[in-house]
Image (tube, rainbow, N blue to C red):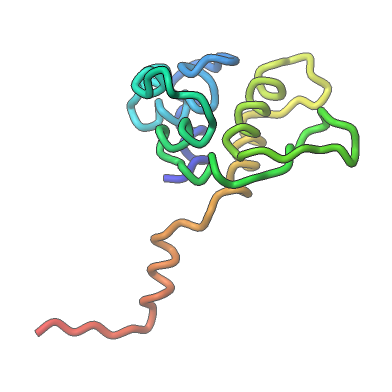
Length: 139
């Protein structure tokens, strides 16, 4: 399953909670796998800080490494920063999905679509393409 699919599934399992690993975007990812986001963070101990460690603990290490521009209007044109996809996810969820009075309001579906645009190709698709047309024989 992809990160974008996990958040949509997780949103049907737990209520949204801004700035709370039990109900944030990452908490929804955990819920989609039958886990509790806060428990995953607690399992990391005191050394949990950093989006690379967090995204790896939630099963998506690429999200902590891949850089992306913030797709929102929180910064002046020409000053849009980049950060890890994991960090951008947290910002968009906390400040655009969960805050109803934000001018640049996002839906959870828009957020999931943005995740989708950032996701690497699934390995299974790449493997299928690599073996397409190959003949295998078993003796």
